Amino acid sequence: MRLPKNLCTPTLLLSLLLLHGCAAQSRLIEDEIKTVSTETLKYYLYYPEAYDSHAEEDFGLLLFLHGGGESGGNLEEIKENGPPKLLVEGKQFPFLVLAPQNPHKKKWWNTEAVMQLLDSVVNTNRVDKMRIYLTGLSRGGSAAWQLSTQYPNKFAAMAVVCGMAPLPYAHWIDKKMPIWVFHGDQDEVISVEESDKMVDKLKHMGYNVKYTRYEGVGHNSWERAYVNDSLYTWFNEQKRD
Image 1 (cartoon, one colour):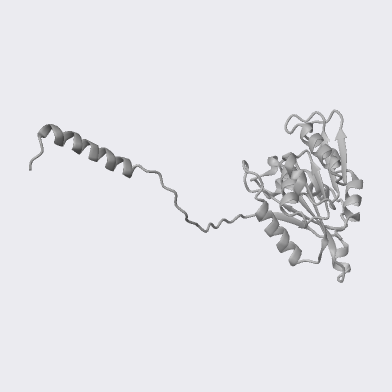
Image 2 (cartoon, rainbow, N blue to C red):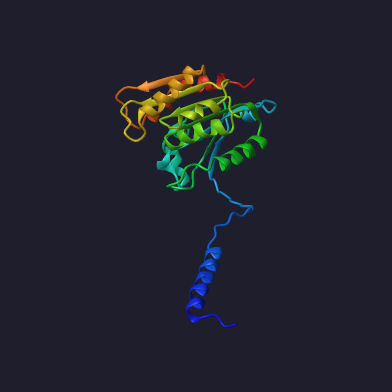
């Protein structure tokens, strides 16, 4: 039997709309992909004078992470600040100093790559794994906070110079690790409040933290922090249980 023309058209339109509705339904799928990323890190590695003469001795190691201004350029640029600058000027340290360069001008440190480098250096040299120290300035100081939360059992002590980190990080840092924070109260790049709040949080939670707050100093607080000999004496006295 042939349907009336005025009935066929609405029925056909309704069928098409239903089919279109089915085709436009949302979907949830489950899948996975294995990603692989690589990072090239240039670095300096300093050996103390006693390293060769005391062949049976293991030494501590200080990992230094520079700021954003030295990222992505010539490796020589990281000698402009911090421990690398002091080494150029002739200062002697009682431990090894590892100073990698962040290859990206506008990116944060790749902390996983840094740790791979650190582990490689530690495993191929006479390094006391209970005496690995961490420090960084500005962007490198922020990376130091991050490393201390990602690898809480790795470092014997940490010094952060004008860095920043979310306050919840405080809950993930090893309470046994001594911390020394430095910041200038006139810092217009990373506000001193970043360190004020983190230090207050850590002290409230019972952490062993020291705070040096420089009056009248801007973002370049590292110029004072890293020439402080007591910082390196303090590092050398720390050891994980």
